[in-house]
Length: 186
Image 1 (cartoon, rainbow, N blue to C red):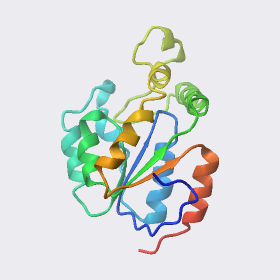
Image 2 (cartoon, rainbow, N blue to C red):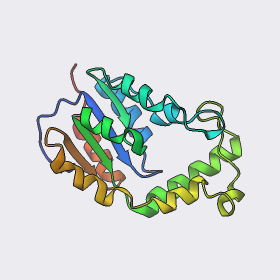
Image 3 (tube, rainbow, N blue to C red):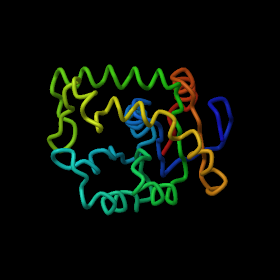
């Protein structure tokens, strides 16, 4: 697994970004998509239908998007993970300390709830008070899944020798890695 200071000859074309809720997957994805000039779709927009229901065509939409030679997408949702890792050439794992990701989720949720920010397909986050009554509340979800990738991603690496695995532990490593990336010629 590569870290932020490792020198490599890297020409990513099919990139996954993994991390727990609040790790900054979508934020990094937007930055990288622009720098690397890769098509990007936020995977949550494919998964969530109206009223937070999973869309029936989710996996087929992911399949369609990742058939191309160049793309960038987040690596989440178990029903699509195998398809995604089998097609990827790079997986970037945002492995921030749990308090960092949890604090980000809390700030983001407060802002989205307060402003009733529409996310995907008409959905808005529920009120904060549901953290104690709704088992699907984003804050409860973030807490219960805060360590989910600690064994999953390291186990993938030997199974996928053709994939670059890059693990970034904390925002300083992300920023350092991005500054070293520069702009990649097309």
